[in-house]
Length: 369
Image 1 (spheres, rainbow, N blue to C red):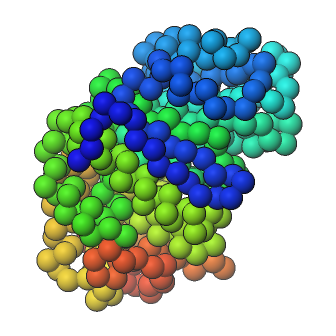
Image 2 (cartoon, helix red, strand yellow):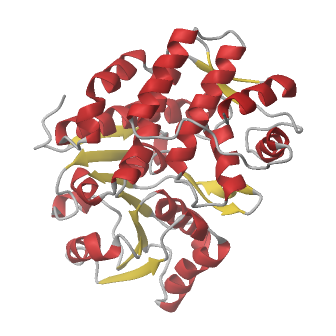
């Protein structure tokens, strides 16, 4: 593991859209953290009702040493507010303060804040710079990295958005100290996923350090965040717009997004749905003969140890499997109505594949028992 006293840097290599990810403690207060950003007269901090009282003052005070004007907009908290109406609050603030195309947006919060701020930055005046300052484990290891931005639609998660890269990602581990335990577990889902899809050695490490991670050991969290960002940076550097390889990062998400949409956004946290979705995707991989029963049980036990649900919810009492299938067909990976799943092939290898509806139904029925 690494020494957390010195910030660690991970680079995303995307040519002229490349940027660094910094991982460390007390980064929000350090003037050097934001010193290399593009020059501008104004900044807009986008945060939410939960995070603002905890960290907004520190960030705003730091930014005032660099920008003449620092504005702030506070959004309602939760996946249920990842909508056009909430997105417009950001545009309202930008226009009310007469922000120009050099204004820098700062996303201070979890994945919802990051996704919406990035989408606003991509859209306002056809593109302004923005910075990700993720304050949840899930957003630090996944959603803040790679340039996916957007909002939800009632019929599908993240179906409206854009690819738009930030200038910088700042993962301040200090913010994880105030994270509710349920949110910490949700973030661990996105950490765990990197093991079966790309990094068997990392999966071994997670298994041996799951207790330390659950107890918020700073060194363990620092390594988990940095290694997760390294793996995602490697994938995104090869496939920025998800034309192939990047789709493996959605392991568990096809089932997970159906759970979120079917239950109503916010009933389960995104990471909880992904954790359960990974169990379902692994069960489908097992049914197709791609992994051994022993490996499936290993993943199931680790996901449970992370405090995540492993039994899927019933979305429709009359025909539950049909409801799942309908929701999964409204997925970005679907093609011509065919559902494509991220499937594990052995350890540390994943691909996109299809499965017969009858087999998927069987997996859904088994997962809901």
